Amino acid sequence: MKSRPTRTACMVAYANYFNDARIKNYVDALLRNGWEVDVFALGGVHSAQPGLRVVSLMSKVANDKALPYLLSQLAFLVYGVAVVTRAALTRRYSLVHVHNMPNFIIFTALFAKLFGARVVLDVHDTMPESYATKFDVPLSHPVIVLLRLEERLSAKFADLILTTNDLHVETLVGHGLPRSKIRIIMNVGNPALFAPRPARAFRADHGLVLGYHGTIAERLGLDLVVEAVHRALPSCEGLRLVLIGDGEFMPVVRRLVENYALQNVVSLNGWVPVEQLPRALAEVDTGVVGNRRRTEVHQNWMLPVKMLEYAAMEIPTIAPRLRAITQYFDDASALLYTADDIDDLTRVIKETYWDPACLDRVRMGLRTFNARYNWPSMETRYLELVRDLTGLGVA
Image (cartoon, one colour):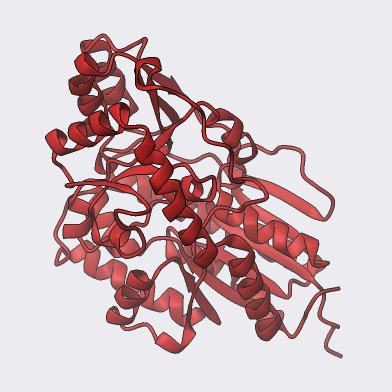
């Protein structure tokens, strides 16, 4: 006799669960609606709320070389198959929700699916374009072609594919994935955590604090941001930059800070748990994004999560005019500059410093953005998809 379906879900991610707001939002939504959730991911194990079990499979390998990076992900797959299968035998998952990258870790759910689980592939970023950007190779490179095959095989195994924006849908369909399987859940900030806050009152002569949180990688242009801060500083004496996060490009950023003697201007902080981010960003007046145009050249349509989290808090963001960004933000809801143009980035920083009233105008635009794109509506959509997929609603 087939066992009765249970409201038990499994999340699998080659990421640190405690630093990933997207995964935590899904988990919290399921927990509040009567599900129990197991998370198999990277990093340490912290205390978790009732109904949640977090299992660390291994530590992430931070490396800018392709082979060590791939071997680490393959090791995660092998270990994940064993651990998830063992858990599925007793937990009888109704849902396995797998987060890329890479896509192929969806096969950790192989036996869980045989036992009756429905499987979701969550494409945070399209893998061929992301790897082409990360390792700066053309989209025609043989490895990138293989990654498209890996993506199609992974998608075929999935019962449902989630992704983060309209341009990702276009890309996935262009890769041969069926549009009928794909749904959008945007990476918008959860107002339960990233709540709108009162604007920090300041005058230009008291300074302006820029903020960035997330991965420190060359493709994300933190060196361009530090260079622009250095150039703006002579006419913006109180300017400061707060960096929260880490990555393989951090040594380069540190050297720039030291070479320009910006130790009292640029604050370099490590990762903090998602729940602590609003407090860590308390002094920030505006976010800043430095994504290079190379992301767009490689058709890597990255809509920065940090920018969406700042938007939820009604913190304006200085951001490059890249297609993935201007698809959702315009001059009324962001402070835009020409990508890769340090002079133009410097100009926007200076203008913001000396005209802080512009931040109030952008906050009004962010309220319009948040009325249209917000986590409560995304959560409702996700729970409806889970119900349709598993036949299980709220408890």
